[in-house]
Length: 339
Image (tube, rainbow, N blue to C red):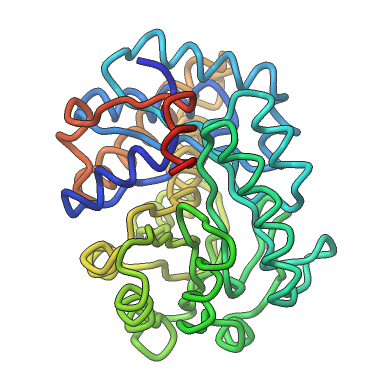
């Protein structure tokens, strides 16, 4: 099965009321973990790479890792998505490299400051026009998230992020002005592990905004960024074996499930995978300090990430849907966008 555009996958998710975990990849073990979990759960997958990941891995390596996944798992629909493209040029280069979906994050300027609405529309529309011409899906963002990760983000504190939440009326206008396939919204979440100082309530995690935006945009696929759950057990493993993760709280699974009931179709998960990998590696080093073969510590790290992926795929409802999706190609989507 070829790589598929994200629009194909999210349309199916909307028709069948489930969400899809968008899982970040930086190396071979991570993509192996994602695909092992997808096969075990019969899940379609969105594998995404940030600009930082593209720089770290190199597009050529990344492209061939994706092609290997396609070859090894021919029954699993896979989206190759650019996470947080910060300029049209970043999106254009990803399309040239074979990405089937790109995010143009015009919510921030190039110096990582919250942008104006007009700037956001200008850069996003430019990407939509170019991407749709070749059948590639586009995600946009309105509002600004807190935190910073992988070099992306405005560095907003939990309190400052509340000042840049998505305005539902503006979200509706943004979709009309740009024609994006999916819309990331700011509801109080943030990038990185340190999302909330205590278990989030409706005062800081505005799930009610999701519901209001969905009412205005019932046919637009919504996206939750910064949505790792940061499980306590993963924090504890890292700290038990020499780490120093400060007490922190993520987005509860039940709140994500609430969002899925109200139009959320793509859920970004990265920190949970990193925590799982790091904890597993620390455990090996602590218990077998003589270990030096990377396979000895990367194998349990890969398994730990796989278990996180299985849990999220199951919780979001994508499990069991891989074989039900008609695998449209980008070439086939060109005619769809011309309508």
